[in-house]
Image 1 (spheres, rainbow, N blue to C red):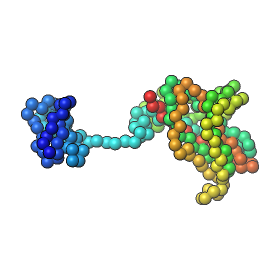
Image 2 (cartoon, rainbow, N blue to C red):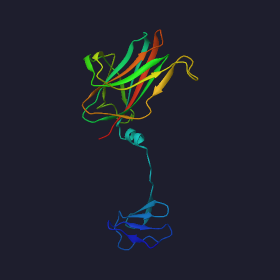
Image 3 (tube, rainbow, N blue to C red):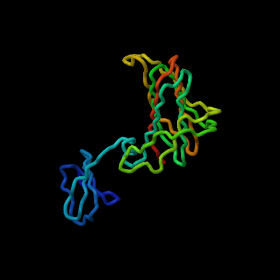
Image 4 (cartoon, helix red, strand yellow):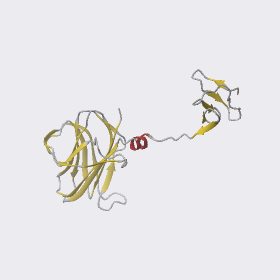
Amino acid sequence: MTVVKMQDGNYLGLSTDVKPTSDVPPGTKFTEHDNDRLWLYDGTSWHEIEIVVLDSPHKWIHEGKMWAISGRFLSIADNDNADMVLEVGSVGLHVIWETRSAGDHHGSIHEAPTVTTAGDPATVSNQNRNIGDDGAPVGKKNPTITGTGLELLTWLLPGGTGGQASGGERPSREEIILASNTTYLFRATNKKGQAADMCWVLHAYEHD
């Protein structure tokens, strides 16, 4: 393949081609078409650029846009709820929710519930600890709910299945994108027949 100069001033060729140096400005790139290696010219010589591919959640963690929101509930009575209300700000949130219980439980997600008392702060932390927690989503546990709003998702998690002798866990399999400027209720209901410990973890990242 002959080395080709593209309209943007960069070059395309093969790994066996001699890279040009005459009248080549610093910052010019050369792509080796046969192996997708990328090179950068510094005005004197060509240097290979390392290409690092990250999956999207990993990228959001690096950028400080991934949050962990969690709550632990001890000795929840049978048929009582472990509730968390999440207030989404001006940027929508992508979320994956996991619930765990020492027995059977129901889980559900609701949009625009009626909240009369906000409750206590949930544990919220940025998953990039070099950045800190400024701008964190607002999560509240044990709120007072007088209307659950629109039910988006519900499930039953039986305890004592497989290797879980006295309980189980249920992660949501796909992300849910929560609308901006909207409140959501995440509810886990104890169905063990007696008091049980429960917890939930919500992984959320912002994406404009």
